[in-house]
Image (cartoon, rainbow, N blue to C red; front, side, top):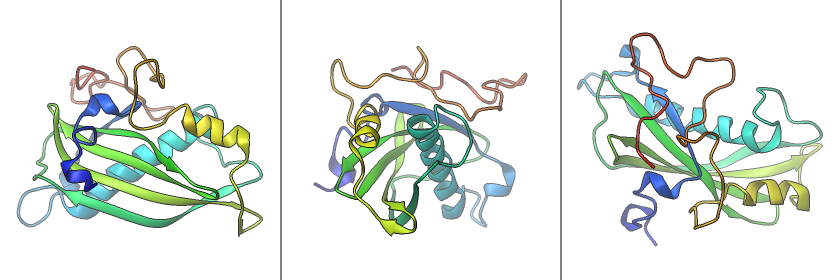
Length: 182
């Protein structure tokens, strides 16, 4: 199914984790909206945070004994994203294969989906594609997209995940830890 027509992909509540991202003035393009490279970096930031959540208990450290390489990234831009704003990237593990898996993500503002991203990552051991072991597979399945009743848990009661070591909310209120109701 085309992800742009999948109602679960367009709903933040379908993603097991959500990650706030603050747009920066430097993210603007010549037309006054956030440029496509900046938006790709929002997805990357959420993807890395999800990987840390799954494989390092949320710590920003290298993986031990394995790594992942990005094999493909597909982004659908559904609407313009503007500055200033705080966005939320909903993310989860969309599909798990033998030696690869898909990160599925959606970019949201005020509950509206502005874009979708799927990243295919390949599991490597010693630089060679290797089957994902059962324990890692189970960790991924715990954060599967889409969330089903009784499914994956969220980082906090409000359903957001933050980057370790960074504040969840600034004094100005620009970065919200509860950007969308779940």
